[in-house]
Structure formats: structure tokens, C-alpha cells
Image 1 (tube, rainbow, N blue to C red):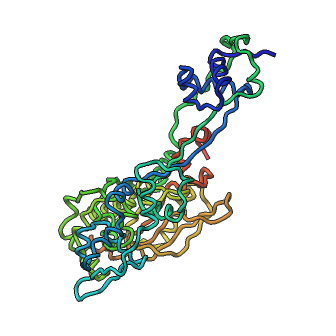
Image 2 (cartoon, one colour; image 1 turned 120 degrees about the vertical axis):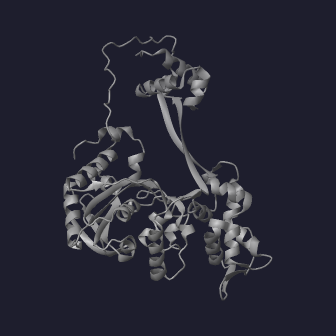
Image 3 (cartoon, rainbow, N blue to C red; image 1 turned 180 degrees about the vertical axis):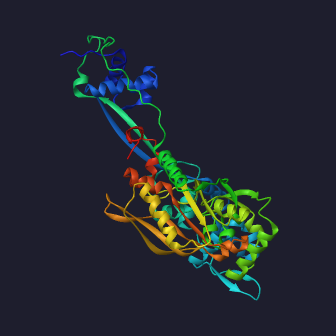
Amino acid sequence: MSQVLHPIEKTIIKLLKTTSNLTEEQISEKTNLSIDQTRRGIEWLRLKNLAVVEESEKSFVRLGKNGLLAKQEGLPERKLVELITVKPLAFGELQKKLGIETNIAIAIAKKNNWIEMQKGESINIVTLKQKPNQTNEEKLIALVSDNKTPLEQIRDSAALESLKKRPDYIIIETTKSRTVSLSEHAKSIDVDKEETGAIDVEADVPRVFAARTHPLKDVINEIREVFVSLGFTEVLGSFAQPSFWNFDALFTPQDHPAREMQDTFYIKEKLAEKLASQNQINQVSMAHKKGWKYDWSVDVAKKMVLRTHTTCVTIKYLAEHKPQDARIFSLGRVFRNEKVSYKHLVEFHQVEGIVVGKNVSLRDLMGIQTEFYKKMGLDKIKFWPTFFPYTEPSLQTMVYNQRLDKWVELFGMGIFRPEVTRPFGITRPVLAWGGGIERIAMLKYGLDDVREFYNNNLSWLRGVPKCL
């Protein structure tokens, strides 16, 4: 039985009879059809069982920005070894030469037993114990070099995983391709004798999808409405913040691991022109000296970062307004230098809130959180004691996930420590809480991978109900 074929289909069949297993791009090039015409014709043939489409994917490894720099200058630990090969150097001298790479270089070199630290009366001296041969990580960087190397050619998986943990050293790219060949039936078709299809006036019209907001944006708007309905006022702040407000004002010590390049995005060669009033700076400095027993540096506090949380917005509001009573919240994007996974992103959304009052207590905070979760459709919750650096006491909110049949962590909460509030003249208790919005959205939409919100899967985006 003959089939009605479109001229595009005939053109593709003629080509595939002479050369099989071609990609869409190859078919387009050899037939002078546009890529859209080619894909449309292949889909028609596939639906008629005249074409066989096979999909495959291949992964390649290439060097990121820091990997390319390491190829030219060496890894931080190698640069450290070269600097102290001739003679030991003081830690301060190494910092001048290695800059922000100093800590990671020393950490790796100590782990590999290449160096030792000798404590003097006022300075630490770094001494070479043994000069290492070329490491597996260095061999891998040399192998990849400026090329895209197929992943299957990388034999040293341990070195690959080690470099993947370092930000922007190794990038793995996956490319997908489709090859097309004719089915057995199509090979016997004489396309010159087949009828050419006409326009089907009774065919279904194209489906039209009305514009709508993104499901994650719906959740963000819902959270904003809930807090406003509970009597809270939203405050806004910039994505870029001085380390002073992002870390120091929250009593985070200046040698805390969260401040490392591996955890925080720093803005290169950019320092804050104005931090706060001189009195506020002095009070925060005194709190750090008294609480953490070290010499606080205003230069470190001036470093600009992409905010790692929105608490920096709320604490700045407290410092500037010193309210006796307040209900405020901040909602927006935050940035963490983390490896992307099913539960972590480098850019995501958080909501933070504070309540200031004469007699407010942890019980009030638990009540606010319970009411918030109920309005979001989450009824089964409980609170667990935990630790957070700038609140005491602190609690972790746990919400029961019916689908997974287990309790999952959501917001953290507590009462700001005196070391956070007193430097800014706040004497009343301050209730504080915060957490990631994507986690709530995952519960609402039944997702197990946070990346689904950013994959642009149109079938999922169009199919998510507006009301849950």
C-alpha cells in the first residue's frame, strides 16, 4: 500500500538510501533543507515507521578558568612548594605572593606531608619537608590542556573528582546527538512513484499555550503574600554586600571556613567604600576581639561578596533603624560557591524574617513559623534543637514529607545572640529565621531534584497546576 509523502520526506528518503546513520545537521547540509525542515521531515518519517532515530550522548572534559591558569602557573600547592624550595618563608610573606590561594595551598601541602609549620614567637614559618613529583592532578591538567577530552579517556577518576571539587578547574560537558536511518520498509519505497501529500484542511490546529508565571515564581509570590498577611513588611537589599554586613555583623569570625573562596563568591578587586558608621565598626570590632580573641581587620570586612544569605539585609535594617517593635522580612536571590547537585545550587532564593519586641520569646517564634507553614499547606511540623552561629537558642524546623515518608529540614530559627545585636544598640530580643524557598517549592510540587526548576522542561512547566 502506497503512502502519501511530503516532498521533504522524499528528499530525506533519497539521501538515506545512499548514506545511512546521518545526523540532522548532516542531512540538512546534504539536502539543502533548513534544520527545521529536516527535523520536521524526520519526525514525520518516524511517526510513519519509515525512519529509525537513535539518540546518544557523549561527555567531554575541559579546563575551566582556574584550570587554565593552573596549566600556565601551576596549582596553588605547587606554587607554594616552589616558593619555599630555596628557603623557608613566613606565613605573611606567602600571603603576599599567593594571595587568596594561600590557605588552600597550605591545606593541601600539609595533607600530602610536603611541608611543616613552625611556630615562632610572633610569626609562623613554612618549611619544605619533601619536594613532590608531578601529582595526578597536574598530570590530568596536562592531559586535558586546551582540548576537549572525551570523558572515557580519563583513567584517573580520583584526580578528576579532586579537581571537580575545586571551583572552575574542571568542566564536564555533555553533548547529545541523533542519527537517522531508514526502516526496512522505507528502503523498498520508490519515492518517485509515491503520491505527494496535499494540505489537510481538517488537520488539528496548533496547540497554543497561554503565557504564565514560572511555578517557582508562584511560590515566591505566595510566600510574600503570607508574610504580608501576618503583618510583616518587606525590606530590600543589594546582591553585592560588604563582608562587614554579610559576615562580621553576624559575629562570623574572619577565619571562618564560610569566608573562603571555595564557599563564597568574592567580587574581584572591589572593596566597599563605606561600611557603616565609625561607632558601629568599633562596636563590631570589640565584639569580635572579646568573643573570638583575635585582631579584627577592617580591610577584610571591606571585601565585597555576592550575599550568601538575606540576613545581611535584615541586620542592616536593624542597625540603621533600631526599632523597638518590628516585623520585617527579606526575600531574594543568594549565592553560594557550591557544587551543583540534586539539593544544592550556586544561585537560589531565600526568605529571612525578624521580630523585635519587649517580651518576645522562642515560643512566639515557633507560633509564627507554625502559622506560616499552615498557610503554605504544610501541617505536619516539629522543631529540633540545633546550632547556628548567630542565634542562641536555635531550632531547626522539620516538615513531614508524605510522599517520601520522612521528615525533611526546612527553615532555621532562633534568637539573635547579644554579640549580634548589642554592637548596634539593640537591647530587646530579636527573633530570626530563614531558609531556602526552593525547598518549600520542591515539597509543594513533589520534586526530588532542585535543578528541575531551572531545566526549562516545557511539558512540566505547562502541566503544573496553578492551585495545589
